[in-house]
Image (cartoon, rainbow, N blue to C red; front, top):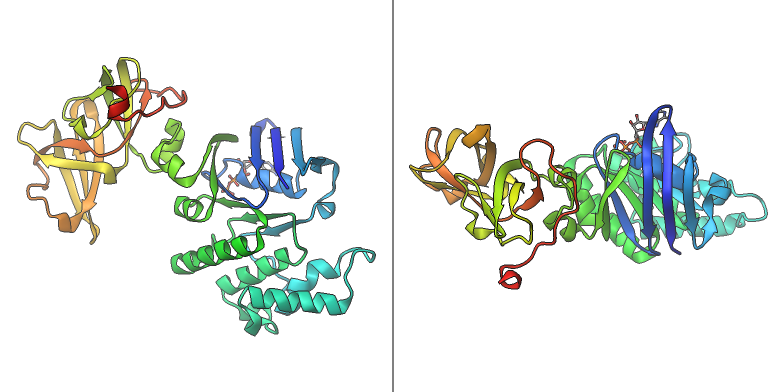
Length: 366
Ligand SMILES: Nc1ncnc2c1ncn2[C@@H]1O[C@H](COP(=O)(O)OP(=O)(O)OP(=O)(O)O)[C@@H](O)[C@H]1O
C-alpha cells in the first residue's frame, strides 16, 4: 500500500520542526530520510508510527487516515538506534513479544507464535541465538533481533531510526547488506532514518534529503549525488568547495579555473557559484596559476591539498597519493581543473536556493 504525507507540520513551542512535508512512499519501497542532526527526521518517523502527532497535515496509508488511528492500531514495526530489547527475556521471547501482547481476538495461538518465531530466526540467520539473553549478544546481533521483533507482527510499514548508528564501521556495512536482502525478501515498505550518506545511498531505492524541517530533494541515490538541487544539498553531500565564477554563454569562467571538463550550462550570464567535491578537482602545476598550495597532507591513500586563490577563495583538493603528480607541494602555484561540479546562480554571499537549472550536455547546447 502507498503511504501519502501531505503538508505535515509540527511545532515544539516556537520552533517549527516540520514545515510542510509532502512525501509519497510506494508499496515495497525502501526510502532513506537523510539529513543533519535536528532536521526533523526522527520527528517525522515518530508521527508515522503514532508516537507523536502533527499540528496540521495528512497521513494516509492505502487511502486510510492514519492520524485517526492510535499507534497500536497502525501495524508499524519500529527499530531504534539503542536496542530496546527486554533484558529479562530470551531472544525468542523478545521476537515473540509483539504477537503475545496483541488483543485476545487477534492474538495467534501459542503454537503459531512459536512457529512464526522459529521461521524468523531462520530467515534472519540467528537461530543459534534463540535462547540467549540480550546481554549475551553483540551490538550487531541485538539489532538483528530488534528487526526480528519488528517484523514478527508482519508490519505494513517498517520504521528504522539510525538502527546501526551505535555500531562500528564493518558491522554497519555487513548489516546494511543483510537489511537490503531482508527487505528484498519480505517486500515490506520501509523508511530508514540516517545521517550517513553512504548508508542512505547504498541501501535505499530513493533518498529524501531533509534540512531544517523541510524536504530539500527526493530522488534515486545517483540522481541526488550527481545533481544536488540546492546549495544545502550540495554542501551536505560533500560539495564543500565553493568558487565564485562568472557565466558567459553557458561557459564557466573564473581566474585560475580551467573549466574545460565541465559541460556548458543553460543559465543566464552573470555571477554564480560553482560547488565542487575536493575529489573532483585536479590541480595542475602552473607557474602562472592563480591558486597556491598552502598545505599538503597525506592520509596514506590520499593526498589532501589546501589551496588559496584570488579574492580569499579557499579550495581543497583530494587525489590518490599514488597518482604522484610532481610539483604538488606547499608554495607551488596551480590552476584548478574541476572534473564535475554543480552551479547555482548568485555570487559570493548567500547563494540563491533556486531549483538547479537542468544540466545540458555539450551536444544539446550546440
Ligand atoms: N519533544 C520535543 N520538544 C521540543 N523540541 C523537540 C522535541 N523533539 C524534537 N525536538 C526538536 O526538534 C528538532 C528536530 O528533532 P529530530 O529529532 O526530529 O531531528 P533529527 O533530524 O532526527 O536529528 P538527529 O539526527 O539528531 O536525531 C530538534 O531541534 C529537536 O531539538
